[in-house]
Image (cartoon, rainbow, N blue to C red; front, side, top):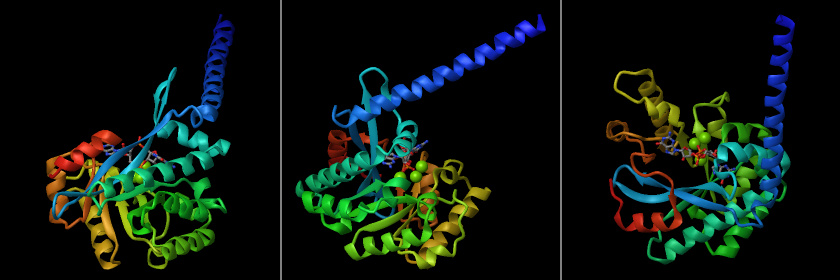
Length: 279
Ligand code: C2E
Ligand code: MG
Ligand code: MG
Ligand code: MG
């Protein structure tokens, strides 16, 4: 009996594994056609200046709306896009669309608005990356200082010497660079003084539980102090409560982003929000 049960169990696991593999294959074949079928769109999450309470820009976040699968989160399909190389075309599309929409809002009278775009490892390593950035700016007419590229420590450190070259090129272009999810990587802090970085984005895991007298506040405070010392701007991501906003203001954090201020919004809703939002 035991043997029989064992046998069933094996079968159970392998069926489950097959389903997982099949799902991945299905996802991949859908992902291959998602661009041509126009299934992607960008949401924009406001970035707020804590000193004035005003929106100074937004982060573009990709969304994939598939007719059968529904809304697939980037956490699920970006890694797959990386594995399959599809990230190159998707990344190019994101960059162009984000610059285009930001330029449109600038032309509507919000000339100061900046746009932050996430860049993944394989996209950043691509030889043509700098040209793609230039192309997006040229074709949309967005001035380079309004574009920020968000790189995680993992992306930068995959090939540090190459990253330094690319980041210096970006700096020459006038494009800004932000380190995303800061504090979760395993890298040494010493690279901060050598790399041309404009912004540190404190990972939301430190912000989520931010309360007086916790170790998280000590870490957040240290990052903000370091930011001031290095003359880089500091953004807190994942702000969910008024208390967190108050603490971040007290610590003189420059910018904030999070559900408390706004969830990522569809383009039209972001546009409406521009006329209203002030925290
Ligand atoms: P990220 O760049 O760190 O983006 C922030 C994520 O935190 C977003 O998830 C956002 O919706 C979420 N978030 C914002 N405020 C809050 C909050 O107050 N509480 C909580 N719990 N979450 C909050 P999203 O949109 O699911 O994106 C996940 C990740 O996928 C992004 O993390 C980024 O690494 C990647 N991603 C998104 N769009 C793109 C893209 O266009 N290209 C690439 N390469 N990666 C992207
Ligand atoms: Mg980001
Ligand atoms: Mg982040
Ligand atoms: Mg993240």
